Amino acid sequence: MMDKTIVKVAGGIGAVLGIREVFRRSKEVSFRDNVVIITGSSSGLGLQMARELASEGARLVICARDELRLERARQDLVKRNAEVLAIRCDVAVHDDIQHLIDATIARFGRIDVLICNAGVIQVGQFQSMQLEDFRQSMDIMFFGTLHPIMLALPHMRRLGRGRIALVTSIGGVISVPYLLPYNAAKFAAVGLGEGLRAELKDEGITVTTIVPGLMRTGSYLNAEFSGGKSGRESMYRVFSAMSSLPLLTGSAEEAARAYIRAIRRGDALVMYPPQYDLISRIHGLAPATTMAAMGIADRLLPKTAGSRETVTGESIDADQPSGGLWRTLTALGRQAEYRMQSQPAGGEP
Image 1 (cartoon, rainbow, N blue to C red):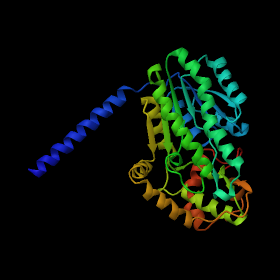
Image 2: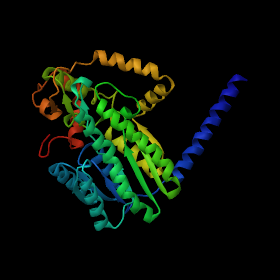
Image 3: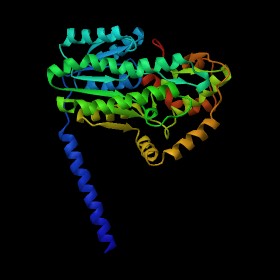
Image 4: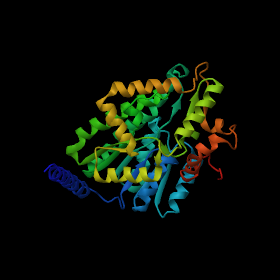
């Protein structure tokens, strides 16, 4: 009798999940010929999402601060037969964002999809940070998300439809040590995405909050590390290894596919890699437990206090040994550097 009950319950759950999946697929839209703006799309996740959309026939507008990397990304997408408009844009500068929106309308006449992906990562203890670090994070990852949305919305409203995606972070759900400026801005972006979805749901405009965990994109090269020299270098080795190991990270290619699928379906929220969804659920049920775990992590991490000097991961990487255990631990991340074009413009494998 018990076995039959278990089978019935399992069958019922399977039926519910199957119906849910059919319903979600019924809401999917095609991005063919859609005009899609992606901020922070010269490398990493932004570039990979652009590649996914290129394969669907979307018309792309990419932007970034570094013109050399931006041109490299444009050429990459053109080789994939995409129609691409590349605009140099610092999302922390309102006039740059206005130019991005105006140039998109001048070229394509409309905006169908906006993906706010631009970001910066600052690594170091709280006492290694300055007020300007928090301002920079908010300018890029909160206001640099809010401003494009505010300027794109009137064009979407004229169409009577649109899709908006905010790329946030697991750091916007669980605040982890050594990333406080980043966490604060990402928490704000999560709140913006969730509230905005509720307000726009009756206007034909769908908002999706994307919550990535660690992914292999080579982002550690572009991260900023603050503190004393030895602490910065130790923290760089830890951060780059954590951003490369398969159990802690996910494939950027798989993540991009998952995120684009969620935007196409109009999902409210998507987390990937899946282990971070589990971690988030545990945090929701037992926040004190996860905060205790963060305290243990803080005690184990290298100390960066003693200076507030900030350097890029790229500059630290240049002085690291060419072999040894660390090189082995970061092997997958280094492969991703070149696939995601996270290395300096003009760099060769």
